[in-house]
Length: 119
Length: 344
Image (cartoon, rainbow over all chains, first blue to last red; front, side, top):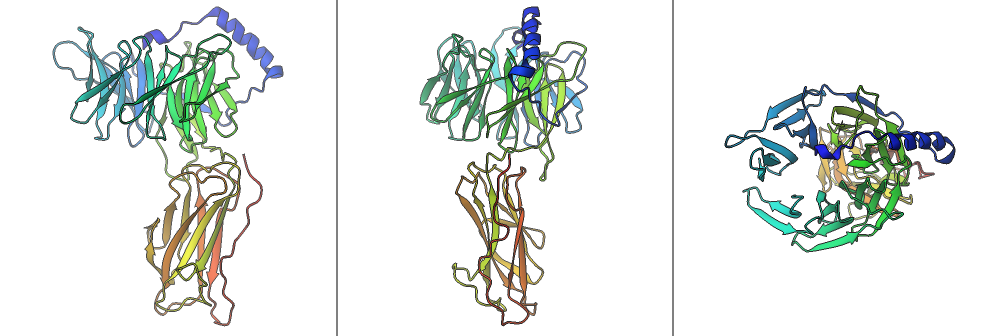
């Protein structure tokens, strides 16, 4: 997942600023009315990857550091370690809730690199 | 889903796995359940979308190159009657029908790298992340127009990546909330402005004898009669998914039966359309009631329409059946507040 975040690119930014300057005349830069975004207190060292939601709307994310995070309706974030069998950590990636109410995870064994499905 | 080996896996609750393979370097990146009952997969490195039927039959649909650039489908969600796909390579969102026909929707911001994708609850909008301008885009499924807002300034450059709908509220919902990670977490709040898709909903309530015939001059003690609330879409687009009609019963009648509505408390019947109403289509909610013994024989029933959005048309209607003096003429099928205009 980490590799998918591109580094800032000066050239792309120059194009973007040019685009923004032209936008007023060329295309209607409509914004989303009433839009607000506020940062949540993300735990130190957390690197949220894939996200899913449970049936009541709490959002869960996988953290490649071997954790799963949960965002409650009040915006509080808690992380829990992904239990593993054997000595090495399981690094979660994709995750979803099954019809059984359990959280199903794709996990990669930290030492062998093997990917498995866990719940 | 596996990327290197490019397979689709199906896991049952006992943990057994069935697998299906795709092109070795196709990089299946995301999947979604379509309204058609099939699973749809975005193949990032094959510029294609794959439809997989429950029996495993797969059909692949190529997305066309844009000015020589091959699409790289990233995220896919079911939206409306089809699917939407983000494509950072060509700066677009693709709208794909369940027959596999793709239409490109170009994003106003240049090189915006659209990635994460989430449908808003009303069915009229989808939201997507734009990694490069650090923004959120909103696509109106009815008009095909895109609005964009920049994420708040942060100490370090952000790359909004995933977006997930969170914390649904009961109706009437005023805010849609999403969690965005970039990779720091953000809570996004936007007014629950639901695109009406051009729907214009008429609401009326009428009284009959239970077979669609004349109800007579007024309710007779102990004789059931029927109230029918009906919503008709006189607009040129489908209504949103969460249409609800509530019928308020007066104190002098009691419920006998109702096929499609649930009694909530003593007097309120909650009726759900259970799906969009197509242009020209209608949904009716018949409710059989009878006069309580000894009650006044004048019955006034009101209906209200709730649907999370704001399509044109009346929000309430009422009908009165019977008068205290029994000489009055019957009042069959009285439409209240006819539909006019449409909203966006």
